[in-house]
Structure formats: C-alpha cells, structure tokens
Amino acid sequence: MEDKKSDDEPGVVNSGSESRNGASGSEEDALPSEDRSLMSNNESTDEEPFVCEVNRSEKRAPGSVPEAAPIIEVINVKKSYILGDMEVSILHDINLTVREGEFLAIMGPSGSGKSTLMNLIGFLDRPTEGKIIIKGRDVNKLSDKEIARLRGLEVGFIFQTFNLIPRLNALENVELPTYANAREGVDTHKKARELLELVGLDDRMHHKPSELSGGQSQRVAIARSLINDPAILLADEPTGNLDSKTGCEILNMFTKLNEEGRTIVMITHDPDIAKYADRVVLVKDGIIQSQDNS
Image 1: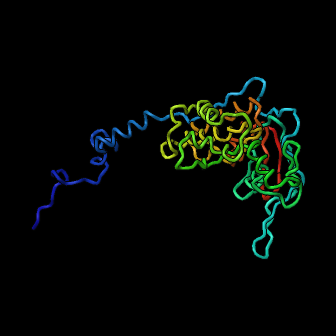
Image 2: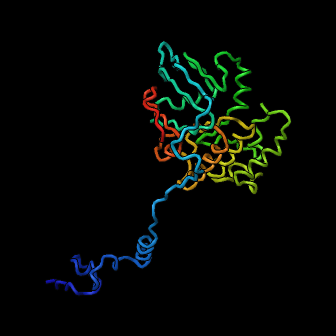
Image 3: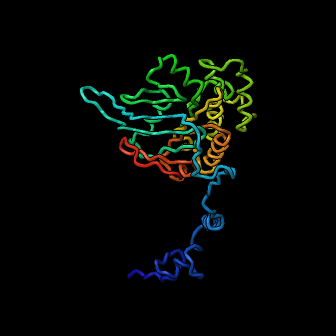
C-alpha cells in the first residue's frame, strides 16, 4: 500500500487559503517580487485626470459672441449627391451666420453633415441650392479661378490628419500654399520661418513630418494655415489625433489666434472641446438642431 503524503510535506502545493495567502494572509505576498513592486508603483503613482485650462482675456469670456459684421453667411443651403439613379441628400435648408472674430464650433455625430458644411464654407464644394457669402462675395457668382484665389488667400485649413507632404520639411510645408496664391510684397520664406517660430518650432524647421510628433505636426499645419494671413481658419477635428495635453496646447493656440481677430470655425464631435468656443452649432441628420452660446 502507498503511503499518503502529508499536507506539510515539502514540494506539495496546498490549495487551501492558508498556503495561498501565506503567513501574512495577503495574496500580494504570493506574487513574485517584481509583480509586487509593479503593483506598489501603480498604486503610488495614480494621477489626477488631466484638466485643460484655456486662457482667455477678460474681454472675451467663453460664450461671448462678438458684435461684428457677418463674414460667413449660409442661406437656405441644400447639398445632395447623385449616386447612380439616386439622389442622396446631405444637408437640408441650412441657415448660419458667422461674425468677424467669432470662434464657432460645429458639433455632430459621424454622418451628420458637419464636414460637408465645412467644405462648403471653405469653397471645396458648391451647394446644390442656396447661397454662401464670404466677406460679401456670393460663391455662386464666382468662377473656379476666382474661388481658388479667394480660398487661397482668405481661408486657412487645419485637418485632423495634418495633411503634410512627407518629402518636404516643416519650412517647405508651411510655404507650400504660396506657390499657388500669395499676397503681393510678402517675403513668403521669411514669413514661413516667423510662423514656425510663433508656434514654437524654430528648432524643427528642417525636420520632415516623419521626424515630428503629432503635436509638432499639427503646429506645422497651423503655421501653414496662416501663411497667407487669412481672415478665416477652418479646423476639422484638429485635436482628434492628439493626446489631451497636446490637444489643450492647440486649443490655447486657437484661442490666442481668435483673440487677435481671426474667425475660427472648428468641427468637432467632442463637447469638452466645443465648450471653449463662443458658440456651438449642433448638426444632426443634415439639419441644424440648435445654435447656443457655449
């Protein structure tokens, strides 16, 4: 007959709570020393959630819409596309006025039509019906060449994915829009250097996009949007690909540009981003649902 092994015999694992917990009664003591150290470090380094602080001057509290002349007017606009034999309606009877110096956020879920509206405001597309008036000029009455000129000089674009040219360095990317349109008497190379200094990238001028972080790439994109001194900045999810801290830095940059007189229209789906604008427009199912001061 085989001898039955004792529960106290060395090398035998007891499944009871005493052996599992050890002498101290703690499950943590049963872990390897490296794991215990990791657990201890995680518990001791818990940080408060990041809270973005956007600095505004006393003259421009959040939600205060400047009383100025309209710079963008969208009047009874509809937009649809033809797909085969079917007409797909994207925007329905949109009416919107943006005033000079306003910081406007356009919010809405994916597929709501908010990016289509931004494309219309930025002359990247034409409305199917209705009028879009920019700085007093009716887009419907302009030729393609006139629209390209107006877009190149009066509107700066900032995209979620940065849209930098990979083979060009930061300085060349900033200067790129001036190859098609430039204001007379401006040294564009000097202006590009000054803008990169403005956004804190004077030491990254000759770096290509692959050598830049996401935040640095977006700063290059902001500098590029300013190269022709536009009156309007259109930003499509500008913080969407950035971490919270870097996104906050970009928001502070927008606020500063706005307080210097730029009109900013920002597309976002994030209410925590939209709340820093003067006014929030909610678009859903191709219709403006509400227009509220933030």
